[in-house]
Image 1 (cartoon, helix red, strand yellow):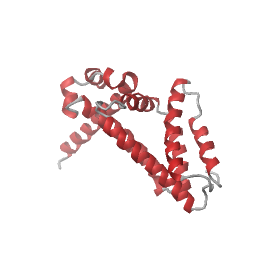
Image 2: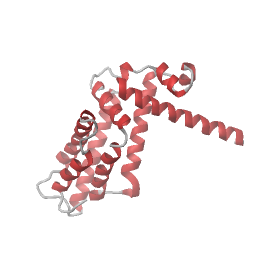
Image 3: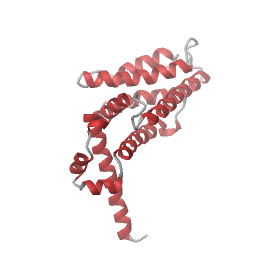
Image 4: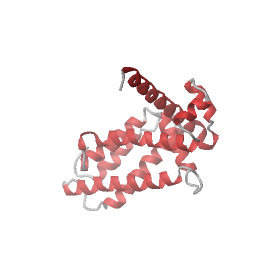
Length: 199
C-alpha cells in the first residue's frame, strides 16, 4: 500500500469515527426516529451523499453507533483479562467512565427504550445485547464464587440480571438528576454487599 493510500485510509477511518460520534450524540438527543442523517452530515462537515458513502442507511448508522459503544465498553471490561471479583470491579469502573460520557449514556437510554418495539431496527441488537450482558455478569459472579469471594446466599444468575438492571436504571436516574446521581458509588456498594471482600 502506498503512503498516499495509507493516508487516505486513515482519513476515511477518522471521518467514519467522527460520523459515529456525531450520530451517537444526535440519537441520544432526538432518539432514532427523531434524528436526521442530513443533520449528522452537517455536523460532520460533509454532504448527505458523503455520509451515505460511509453508512448507506440510517439503520446501518444506528447499528454501527451501538456496536461502537459496545466495542469501547468491552475493551474497558476486558483490560488485563479480568475475571471474578476483579471483573465485577470493572463494571463499577465502567459506571464511573459512563459519568464522563453523557452523550453515549443518552444514546443508550433513549434508543434501548425505543427498541422495545419489535419493529424497531435495533430490537434484535438489544435482545442479543441484554442476553450477552447478563450472561457476562453471571459468569463474573460464578467466578467470584469459585474464588471464595461470593456470599453464600447470592445466586450468580439472579445477581447478574440485577447488576445489569441496576446499571441501566442508574443511568436513567443520572440523566434525570442532571448528572448528580453517583452511579459508581451506588453500584460499588451493591456489589460489595454481595461479596466477602472489597473491590
